[in-house]
Length: 132
Image 1 (spheres, one colour):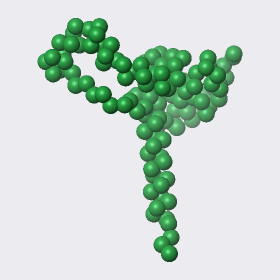
Image 2 (tube, rainbow, N blue to C red):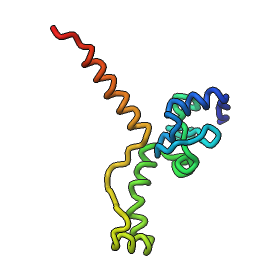
Image 3 (tube, rainbow, N blue to C red):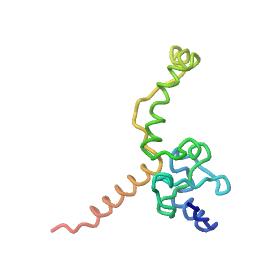
Image 4 (cartoon, rainbow, N blue to C red):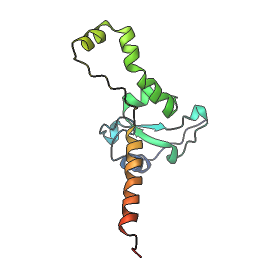
């Protein structure tokens, strides 16, 4: 399948839609350094259209690869377990309280952004609701 070649304006629109941040980790990225990621990978039937594209930093884009968002999240969530099993240094750092593990569910930047937008819409509705 051939990929849709994005124009500079299309890339910039996707970048601005994410507030110039990686859609996954939330780090600020420059337009020249951003990667375009297909949220639903093309290999898994995702569309090659701007509504299936987000900007990502190089690290997140490489790590996500052809995974779905849930597969990517699951892999990241398993990180501490894998480090504990495979790294003596990690276990030592835990023992000396140099690493603070949190077992919270990973929420990607684009999900937080969507949630904030949804909450602010509800707040606007409440503010402008007529009182009868």
